[in-house]
Image 1 (cartoon, rainbow, N blue to C red):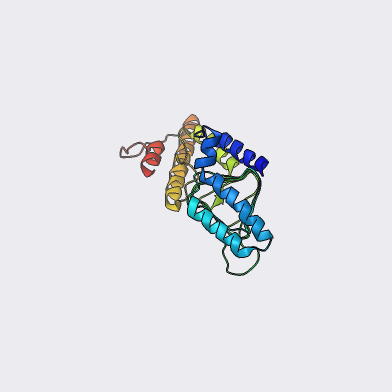
Image 2: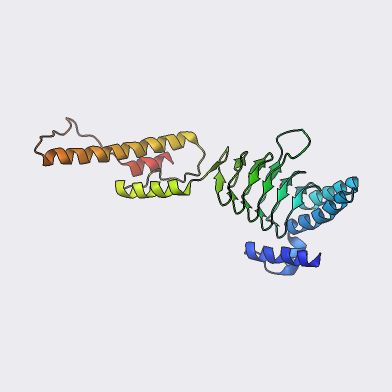
Length: 250
């Protein structure tokens, strides 16, 4: 028991720069208290003292603001930072070295018996306010962004963001950045993590327009090189500035 407690304290030092001493952690960190209470409640649940286990869990929620069902399986070195509003359901499973921030819900999507809560692998990080719902699997080393609503499996090492959550494509982001350099402005000018479809659509149109203008300019250059006469437009129009348009859309 004391070895597990030492692990819990060392994990706080690793993941929370505000931690200053072991005494401070043991006496003022609700995440530590919730984990310790859960270990007792989980053991009582295994011994089939179900009411007593639920009552210990109830006391822990009252003291810490963190609700963990006694039947939930919580691994080693799990860190619940701040913790207020965290809810972990009956059939949830949390792997070792996982970090949960405040407001996280590991909830169910059905009233039927059986497995109905998520399974988190090792080294998972779940941002503040995220909701992971249903008997889905979050792979080892995956990350869930703040306020995301996850209802599908997340592969190991992936990052899920948005409502509903989707996987961030790192390769796609890299290609977009490379294309932006050739065009001369930052395509989209915002994080692809944003979930507003209208904003994404507008940025996509700006991106497409900028690329179309560039291709037209290159086509005109080739025609002029071949001796063709290409007349300019009849009226002067304001220069198309995709970077500025992206900025004001944000």
